[in-house]
Length: 256
Image (cartoon, rainbow, N blue to C red):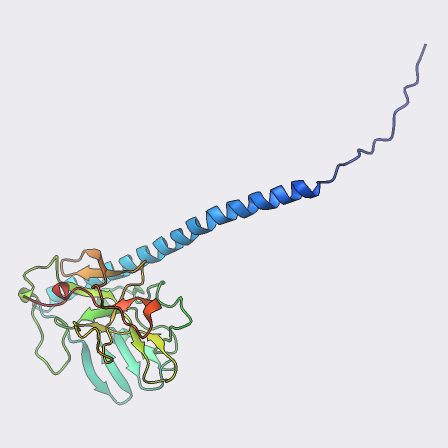
């Protein structure tokens, strides 16, 4: 005997999430986000630091090549004025208002040794609304040690005077605070040389080391290696204390 099986409709009744279940899911997502965001932020900071280290390493190697071709003589910090600007060690900056100056990096002393590599930009410098570039866009992130790379009106320094090549800086993260050209605004700006200043309490104290990598600065030394440096205690520029501008150790900026 055939039996007819009666089936109910094939529609499956779905059960909606309860309010408690939704709140639990949202709480789990929030917890995971809170755990992942610091990790991602730390990864971004590490990547920026690594890119900066690579830039400085290339600048150091380019300087060693320059010494080989020039009897060990260091280049000048600047090459003098032109009709429309100044030629510095890294390129030509035309006259004009900060933020609007044109520039040409091909005039830089080390340009032929960098094989077209763009090593000028540290990705950690221009992350602040307080940063104001000198040119039509960001020009250069690093400063040279002015005890070695002197202005054009002084005799060049020979590298044979560097008796501690692993301990004397060639280049480092640099910046300065500007509170006098656009008052009452205070800006963080590019700065292209490094020197030693000791009057930390003076209102005219404007250091130029920039400790922008988790309060550390990357430095290229005269043997070509790159290391990190901490700010000299008490040397923080109080004009913009949140920007970590201060003094590098004098020991790495001065010849014995």
